[in-house]
Amino acid sequence: MTRAYKQKLTKAQRKEFKARMWEFRRRPADQTPEQAEALEKLFQEVPELRMIHALRWQLTDIFDRAPDRDTATTAIAAWREQALASGLDWDAFLGLYDRHQDGILAYFDHRESSGPVEGLNNKARVILKRSYGLKSCASLWTRLILDVNWVGKRIGRTVVEMHALANRIWTAFCRYYT
Figure 1 (tube, rainbow, N blue to C red):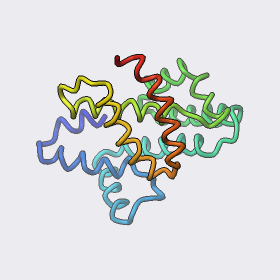
Figure 2 (figure 1 turned 135 degrees about the vertical axis):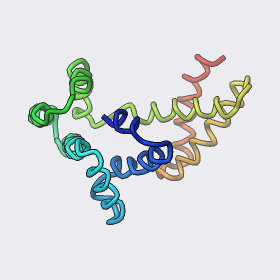
Figure 3 (figure 1 turned 30 degrees about the horizontal axis):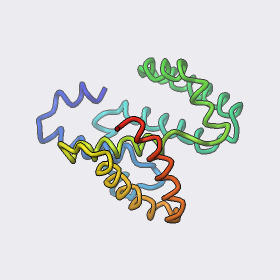
């Protein structure tokens, strides 16, 4: 939907549109009045985004509030009906949900996700790209730990906890990169 809209824009307009899409991604409760106004302008330009935005945050709310798998299953089924009734094309998303429903709903069993692992993998990829020609596993590991330790300060883990995590990751890491 946004692709078709962006194709009609000039390069400068596309850049401005891309900047306004950040307001679309921000939680409504965290928006400043200026950001809410920018989002409203975006909705006026592409009205379908209003429904997508509302449904997106309804689904996010289910993941934030549903206490267990059964409650989440019921809430997501109701959300699904709303999404289908919206008249928008949700086929790809709903197909993905259908194929991975058990894994997605497993989140509600223990409220754990693979996000931290995916974040660490992404950080390693970024370091590899920034460090073109890096050959040494030890150098890559040192750079990764430096970045993770910086993040550790922000998430409030102790140095001992970060070292224990680093040692577990190091053990797994060296099996693949040596």
